[in-house]
Amino acid sequence: MNDALKQKLADKNKKLIDMVIERAKRDFPEDIALIGLTGSFNTGDFHEKSDLDLIIVNNTERGWEIGSCFILDDVGYDIYCTPWETRLAQQAILENPGVSSLTDLQILYCAKPEYLDKFNALRQQALDMMAKSIGIECITRAKKHIDLAKQNYADVMLSNDEGTIRYGSSQLLYNLVNGIVNINT
Image (cartoon, rainbow, N blue to C red; front, side, top):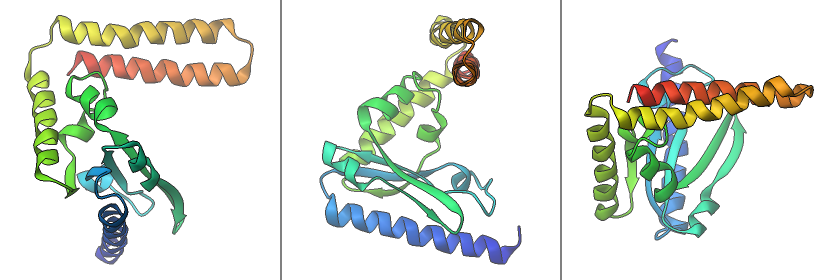
């Protein structure tokens, strides 16, 4: 990818990020805690059709209202929220295998310093858990996903419905990958 295209993407992302942050400040000052960047634009592994992966941490139910989906320049964007308790807290204890979006998240906006402290504590908790040797905790977490994969396999083998087979196959792969991730984290 040439430098001009990289700059065009960077400019477009900056405009989108600035609009989301401005809206959070203006319309959701108590409802949105953090906005962070994850995904390919955070890692530098992006291409011209990459979307902007923002994680918006909401404090209240009202915070969900900032969410949006749209297409811009042939790229689909999802502006979505997550509460502290479900995604980030689960990632901190490695119950959600997408832990890299917690450990590698680039904070773009923080409404209050205590939110950054809370986020950093969750991040550190995840890093501390990942630093432990592979043991019974890893095996127990992995077993949950492997058991789900076994059920998915049974569902696939017992079905004659093409849609059920496709969905079950995707769930089977998803749970196997999550099991492997948990054995290695």
